[in-house]
Image 1 (tube, rainbow, N blue to C red):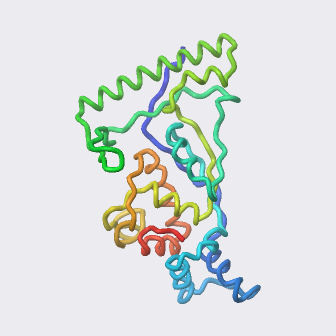
Image 2: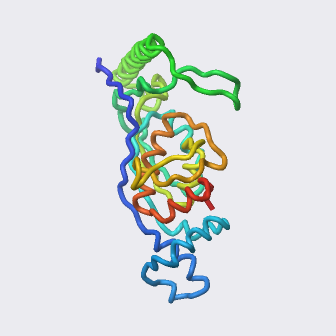
Length: 254
C-alpha cells in the first residue's frame, strides 16, 4: 500500500493574464470616442474614470481582461468555489481518468477549530493543542484507510470512477481557473473577510490601502479564503488602480 502525505497549503499560481488598468479605461471610453479611445494611459484623468466606474456600478469595462490561475487545493474547497459561475471558467483534475495522488489536507495549527453559535450567527475560535493533535491523528488515520481501500479496488480492476468513491473530499485536486476582474471582485467580496480597516501595498503588507472595512463583511471558510488572498495579491499587483478603487468603495465590485 502507498503511504499518504498530508499538507496544509492551498496553492495558487498565476499562469497567464491579459490586460491592464488601461484596458478598463479604453473599454469604457470606446462608447464616446470610438477608435480614439485606444490611447496611452493618462495618469491624471484615468484613475478618476476607474473610480467613477466603480462607484456608479458600470461593470462591463472591468470584463475586458483575463487572469488564469492554477490551483492545488482539497476538493471541499472547490465545492464552494464552483458556486461562482458568472465570468469564471474551470477545468479540474478528474478521478475518472487518472489515479488520484495520495495527498490530503489537514488544517494548520493556526486554523480555528471550534465553532460557537448557530448558522448565520456563529464564530470560529482557536481550539486547544490537544484538540488539534487529535484532529490531525484522526484525519490522517482515516485518510490512510480510505486510500488503502481505493488502491485495493483499483488492483481488483474496478473502474477509477467507482474506486474513487472511497476517497474523502479532503484529497487534493488541481484546477485551472480563468476569470475577469469583475468576476474576481465578486469572488473576493464573498471569500475574504475584511471587517476592519487594513494596510497594504507600499505600507505594511502585500495588499493595498488603509480604507475602511468591507461594506458587507463575509465569513468565508478559511481554506477558500487562503486561495482568495493569493488571488487578491495578483489583482493588486497587475491592476493597482482598479484594486485601489475596489478597496476605496469598500470592496463592492461593479
